[in-house]
Length: 126
Image (cartoon, rainbow, N blue to C red; front, side, top):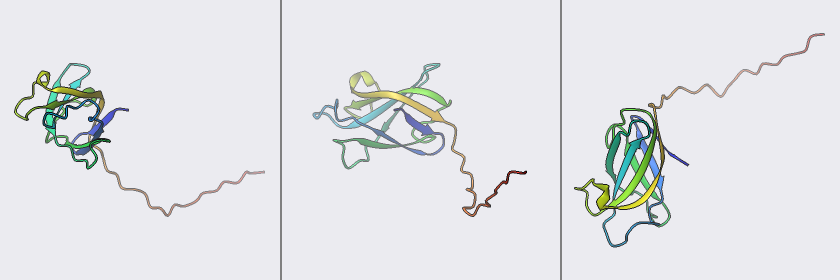
């Protein structure tokens, strides 16, 4: 399963980081996003918002605030546990997860049609 981010809105990212995390260092989570075509790299620290980090980790990424993706499309994501938030060099952190990410255009909210629909029936002519 891949993560999905819509441009211009807050997006929830649900991952599992506890399997490979180091209990002895701080839980500063560095997310690294790499565009599959072109190798553009984006980095940001996100805060774990879950009450059950042993089961899963939930983060909110507001596209256009924490990260502004210049292109939609396919990315690879990696998450690193970093000793502090002043250092974005992932080689000094602990690798905990990677996967695929899709960045979509901004979601367009369209009005929904009324639930009161007209039923049309057709009869077969003789």
